Amino acid sequence: MTYRWSRELYESAVASVKADLDRQGLEGDEKLRYLIKNITQEQTNDEDQMRCFIQTLFALTHHIRNEALNEKECELLIERAEVILRLSGVHPGASKIDFLHGELQQIKSLLYRKQGHHWRSAWEQEIGQYVTKTERGERGATTLGLANRYARLGNVQFALGMYHKAI
Image (cartoon, rainbow, N blue to C red; front, side, top):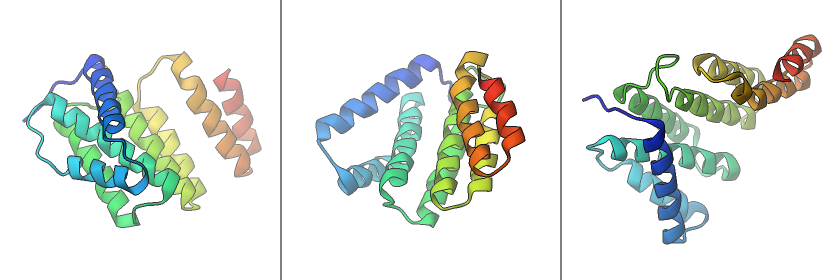
């Protein structure tokens, strides 16, 4: 089954997930358990799939801040998000909402950075920027972050080029 997503559906789903979490009034690990419970439910339409994808990103972001999941759980959530994107017809460089691939790559980058895998983190961030077709202005912050990461890794020449590109 292939779904059709749009930026409007994405924005609506993000607002819906945030409102739902606010209504629940959950904090910490309770919020994570609630997200995981919703992620594992069956999705039958575009909106359900989009909500599941967003909840997966929220769960991974929660983990980055609070280290609430183990490595295998993180891998499974990332795999689930990638499958949802494929099933939904969101292909890198070929979709109007391919920025979602970049969002997922950014989260993977942050996970690797938190684990101390700085080169792998930089690679994931670079891939995220590559697979997402965005306007030049939208890439500025990502490029700046990548430049900072390369500067911390000691690759000053490359970092300077990235700083220049970010401007």
